[in-house]
Image 1: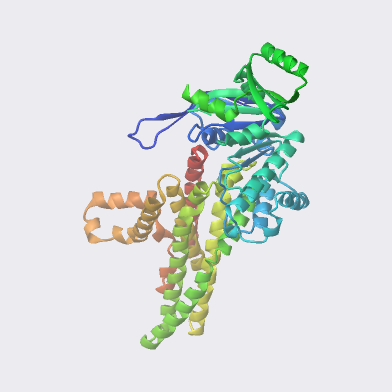
Image 2: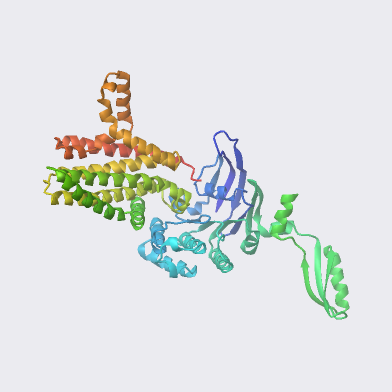
Length: 290
Length: 256
């Protein structure tokens, strides 16, 4: 859907300060129809990457290439992109409905399509009850929901979200994740940044992980987990003799199979047999400390 | 692009209007009526002119004040609150965004000027002041002055921070109003280098006295269509110049 090619970005706080590198020749590709998490600790360069992706800031070198399916001109490309910034803050004196209509009209939606989509998404995001209230009366979570409704209003093909779940309660997080999955099942490409590893592990099939402006991983999430999986197997069975579950850790696949075969002969009941893997969080923590 | 510009202008106007800034018209109307009444008790001969002076003065002051203090936040607040990201991540160019915001705010300034001026004129006519078509041109010039101030402050706010923009705009406004009179001071006339410097300044920097038509009205000076036409044209061209500079800056600006 889009590709980062050798993107480098440096910043200078003040004229006399030395420059610091935020992104160092960052290259990665996000394929069409994937649900891709953009992971990195605070200050890793996620938001800067998103700003470059959307043309808010220019890179020092390198280019961002969008798939031809999105269009050939900026106007065509951006009409198929939905973006929600981190902690969005909208015009406080407009009502939620006015703001949605404003954005719908900038997305070139017809009044009917705009109204239909407002009804659909605000209901789905449980914000429909507050549409006639001024935005300044909205809570942080409500602003997030309104922002997401605005992002989806024009039925974009590529959805880019910067920390979309910050400020949401557990129910809200669950609802957002369900909508991400639903959108992805409809064929949309979802690319969202987060520093919460579990969110990405839970719903993404692909991930881009950056650390201090450098690419750490890009590709299928399963590949990353597999690459960092251990050779240990956890065998859990019910031992009638002591009347409780027992867990054994066996190293090596063949040894594990032998172990299971031997204890099945003894007519013990197997409860679970799981290859021990590191969670994404553990992998990232391990790599950062190596 | 034109449709985007008008959409942004429309919602900018709605947003400013909803912030209840137009309430200032009520306060100013009460002030104009009260001051005109008090002064008419103490002045002899021309109470209507004094009320007009105060009324148009307040119209000018309120519009310029709104232009400076709201104008400085017009784009910078959009960047600080990241609202601009929601807009330009859609098929909307930065040029449309800028023009829309400026058009919306300028319309508001025009509206504010007209409303306060209508109150001032009503009091003036009530005090038996005579009608002249110059009123319309003068009201337009007050609005144009405020719009020019808006373009100055927004242009500066794109380059420097808000505080410096406000202070510099106020300084430019004050100097711009006094520059023509300053050129005629003996001290200046006797020093050709200083006179040349002021002449260059008045040609390059915003010359607000060029579009100040209130004095013609208040002192019953002759003002021909070619003169006021040129004055208004000067304001329009200067606004176009500032808009071009701002667009060039905004197009290459990093919105971080």
